[in-house]
Picture 1 (cartoon, rainbow, N blue to C red):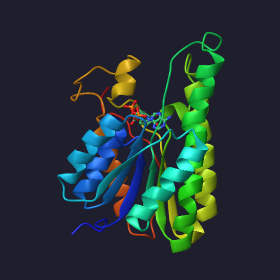
Picture 2 (cartoon, helix red, strand yellow):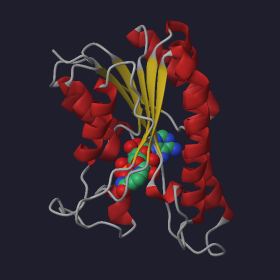
Picture 3 (cartoon, rainbow, N blue to C red):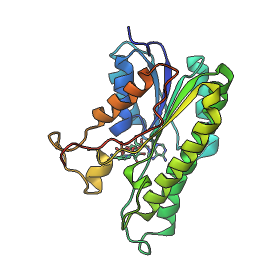
Picture 4 (cartoon, protein in one colour):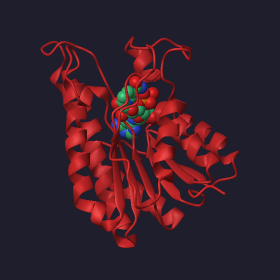
Length: 239
Ligand SMILES: NC(=O)c1ccc[n+]([C@@H]2O[C@H](COP(=O)([O-])OP(=O)(O)OC[C@H]3O[C@@H](n4cnc5c(N)ncnc54)[C@H](OP(=O)(O)O)[C@@H]3O)[C@@H](O)[C@H]2O)c1
């Protein structure tokens, strides 16, 4: 039996892409999953797929960048589950554009979603993990959080911020038996990378797939509690 069976998880942005693959991998392990996002239709469809594994699967519609919505929704999810063990902070947006061409509003949206959204959700989930003296938080950064590149200033700034926030939290709460893991994956085929022109559809032979990312998260969670995956960079073997 999986050591993760009957754990309870929240995955932000769990309706599609990397978050959906993670939700499916969790359901296969017997983890109850709450997926979140803004698109209810997609969330409903994914919840049906998750329920086919015989686990409790629910969804919540909210914008991670809206603190009031986050507060209400996290409370409802934890009340429904009774407790919470795992948070995957995956929701994120990206855009490509030169420093001066990108609108101030778009730059702000990226920071609000990728940084403030992660902060808001974590702030609401953390008290439950501290109370039970156990938990796992997986924060999704990117290779763009390790190195700046032309035309992705907002995205890169947001993902650098994620690493700083995540590592700082990790050092605060490891004494509370809470493992905080910061992921910096390279390009993975998803709506985001196809829309930006970084990946092509159906490029399974060369480009990382969402299920590769999900497998890494599950492997990290399966480590004995004394061991913690602090950070991990997932790259494709031969791009
Ligand atoms: N794909 C890659 O190559 C790659 C590499 C490194 C890191 N990442 C990171 O991995 C994460 C997932 O990326 P992906 O490739 O799976 O992207 P994606 O296919 O575009 O999915 C993004 C997810 O985030 C959710 N989301 C976006 N803005 C939101 C908001 N304001 N409130 C709530 N949910 C929101 C979306 O749900 P709704 O549309 O329903 O709101 C969707 O489920 C992101 O943080 C991304 O930066 C991706």
